[in-house]
Image: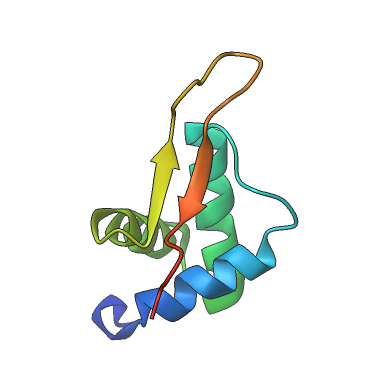
Length: 83
């Protein structure tokens, strides 16, 4: 799989649609994003991790830790307009 050829905007939209509820907590949520990527693209865990990291670096997804507590973890957010 050529990671450079993946449309990150479309992938982010598909991941958001594939998750039954918002991904919460930094590590748990990032794992959910990675696992959804594996299922959507039938790629390896390493490739999916690299894609998630790239989506974060380019602003397609971000982790909002504002007000984060043990009882109320932060949430992963998708950019409102991915086009």
